[in-house]
Image 1 (cartoon, one colour):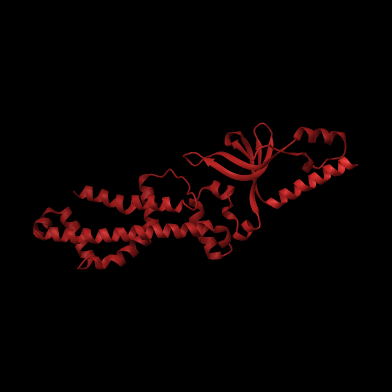
Image 2 (cartoon, helix red, strand yellow):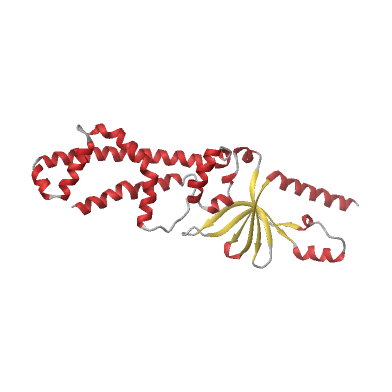
Length: 276
């Protein structure tokens, strides 16, 4: 009976809360996929759930008509020791009812606090870029948050951008060199991961390809040409590149208006060439 009770306690107090925390926190930011052992997973969950568990116990300690700690200790002792159970006699069921009633109230409060905490932490983590200027938050996030967040989410999304940058139109740009020596650039639309958290592909919007052959030919014929003149727009709104085809990946920030300005300048330059 004790083994069954211990397994149920681990499931209710540590395993399910860890799943709930990951589920609701991932509404804001995807957590990194770890290949942890069962003991490490329980230890990680214990650290996350310790505060809501303590607060839940303090809030619900009045749910039992006597102090809960002695009742829980008496109940567990009776489960372990048959002599203690015989000594209690019929009072064992009263003790069990009081202990389980308090635990029921505590678990309900514990889960509510855990979900609310995961939502609050997720919202704070979502605004990491705006809060990064705060030294306390930045240090706390760098030590606790970032090691548990998917590294691809940090690199390929606006996670690190402040709200001011987002309003200004700053977006994440990827310069991708493929295994066949083709260079592409564009705004990162989305990305795909496998079950282990490894990158499987990147979607680019407003993608362009660098015409390397024409650039080398122009370089041989005369003075060094401007590389900006050899970017070619790729038809279609979205372009998806498989990770296995990527040889080199460079991530940078750029404003969408900068891309539009370059397009306008290219258009005006082409029109000027036609007029001449």
